[in-house]
Image (cartoon, rainbow, N blue to C red; front, side, top):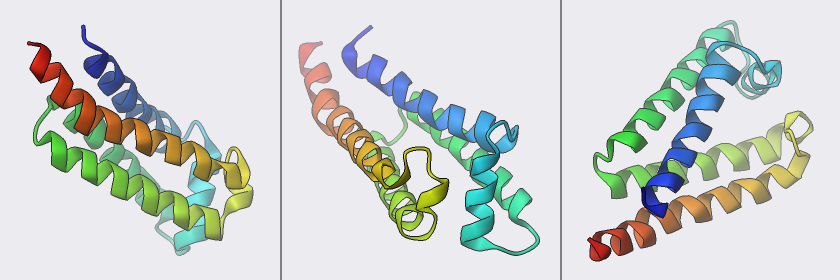
Length: 126
């Protein structure tokens, strides 16, 4: 298995864990609190589950390999947007506080590298 595929599965696992375990199964209540504080209203439990299902869908999309560049760009946009909003509105609920933004940036760099650089080099090696 290539480095590209290993990194791809690692990234998909991050989306799967956050979607399934943290939001859909509600094993990490902090995720529900984040949605409640940012969005508010009566439907935050349903919204958090919908976000979790979308994250599971992202994991499936990553593993499928369908439209890899669009997938890479979409992941980067979602992670950047979500983390900037959380950085501004709910830093006290984040696992590493405002340092979460640093870890998000590292993940974005990994996704970019794997989606644009590793994808091309793994194809050339075949």
